[in-house]
Image: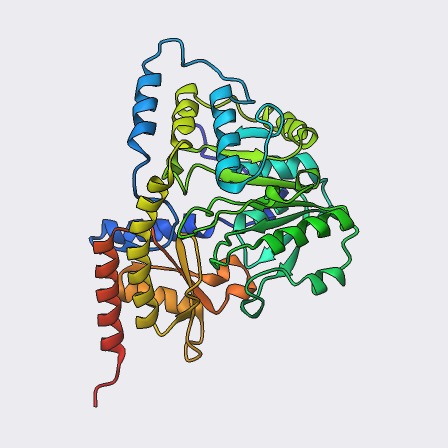
Length: 400
């Protein structure tokens, strides 16, 4: 008996109606297709460090991976070597005291920490404050989990810091979390001790948890800061950090969350029902990486400074302006007034110069007149991207 072909119609969960496919997921598929056609696109889009971790960290990983007893499930709370490593790192560089046993929890990545924190604290229908512009995952995960997103403005004229007068006029009665991110992505704005002190005071007064996402503090930045260095911050603040950026380990998927012991307990309750711990050899290698001295970070930044110079030349070639005081692994620039649309500019660069840059609108409406260039690209490729863009601009200029 011949079976008829039937379409099996199953509707997805309604929560998928609240989000779209991640911009980079969609656009990088297009870039991959162009590369398959031999177009050799230079990607200046994603912030994925292209330099290796320290040799000591890799050696530790290889040695530990040979331990026949080291391949089983691990405790969700992490091994003592890693917890103590994170605590020493915070004390050495951020001047923040953390109890390694009760105030730190390893994560398989700080992006995953956004999920765990939101699940631990926000009920469906409650609100979260999200920066505009800001990391798109703050918005998408909040919506997927049924939270209501309330945007707060970051603007160039205010140095990309929250407008506290504007925040004070908002109805915050349903707000549970406020997401902050300094050094800021995408704008490159740096935090100050005064900003962190004001955020802690705001959180206390409003009964809101401030969650500071802090993966970029060692990139082109002479003074790493943590909100947890502010006295009393651990009572009302949570900080996410990562091995991805400062230690060139994005594919390792290893980060941390730090806060008071009670909040850690809430997050652990969520995480232990989702994950199964981190490979022991990776934890030991991360603990080794955290022992890096100042020369390690300076070696990284020496490379980034050269790349930053080339990225600045690309900005100028496109007629964009930018703040020289930016930190982090991106360069954020304002497009010229003569350019009608940032996505149109980004697509023109992609299709005509075969260079992928990020249009700022994906980070929020306040990014609609900006582009972002990643510094995670070798110097020769950045120089080639600059040359291609100059040729594109020259070809578009009417000849007398």
